[in-house]
Image (cartoon, rainbow, N blue to C red; front, side, top):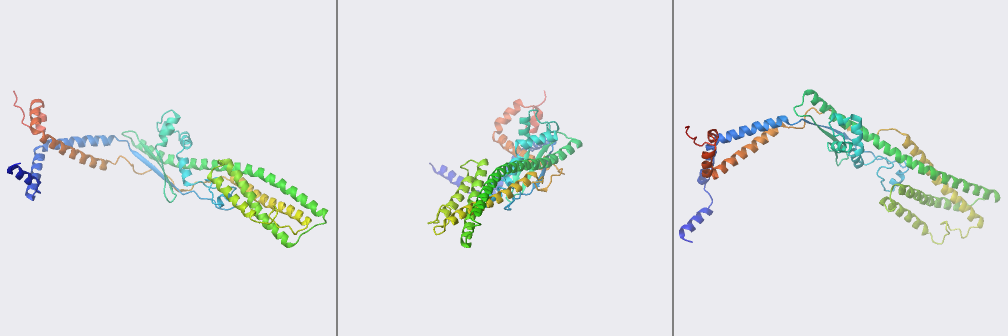
Length: 418
């Protein structure tokens, strides 16, 4: 490498001075000025096409509504499954209001969309496909559901007008978008109530069967106890044995109640489901607690020093006490499910109902025009520098093939006439 090459390489790696940067900027501006006519025409034509396009875009309206988060029924006697919930298990709304996620799933279900099409005659009003399955899928694509962290559910419906809509079509789109949202909320309430009534009916039928069994058991034990007392001349025991019987009856009734809850849960869940497993775990703990009573008989009471009559009486009294407590529980839950099945109260709380939107959400013409102008201008500048880069070849080609009016746009010399 000779001295001349080394000098040029060193100069190339040196930072540019302000004078050099100004000279480059001047060169760029000179190029832009040389093609000012082309740039002006390019931008004007591009803007005219953009404005023409944005004027043909259909108007889009979005109607929205807000739903309050579903309330959970936490009362211990509100329904049969509320006792299961009190043990830390949530059966996803079997005994109370469903979670917000369930509401969202219902709003996005095919059943609700199909009901919307039927209720509002949307195939004709929206021009949906005649095929119901395709129409449902297309309608679902325009329904938006979002659940906030606070639990509030936002439901929206997006509706577009035809191209070049008149005032009547705009008003119809505004009103229909709100009608779809409000009707969807109404159908959500109907479907949710039907689900709750069905679940309450299933629980009521189960409780009715279990109540009849426990009532027969209670009556049978009551008769045996009554016959025992008559035979033994109103036999009675001391207070200590009475307290022991009542204490053990509480544990036994809890065990039987859990067994009933497990049977109810297995009607709606697999036997290995988390809900069932948790209930079985609680049952095992109660039975283990009862089994720790060492030195006691199968009833869990220490009756080694009690006479035979006391043993028999204690067994009969314990059976009657347990059967009575379980029957009382089942009877109260049975009436609760009857009320749940019969009631016709709204299950959806609307925070903000949908109203016809005052302004369209699209097209945003001003924003579109600004963005289009920026893109067209940058594209025009890039084209100018590409043309300048291949200037000689382009000019030769243009002189031979372009008409005079095109040459004028690019600032080329026009060919003389004749």
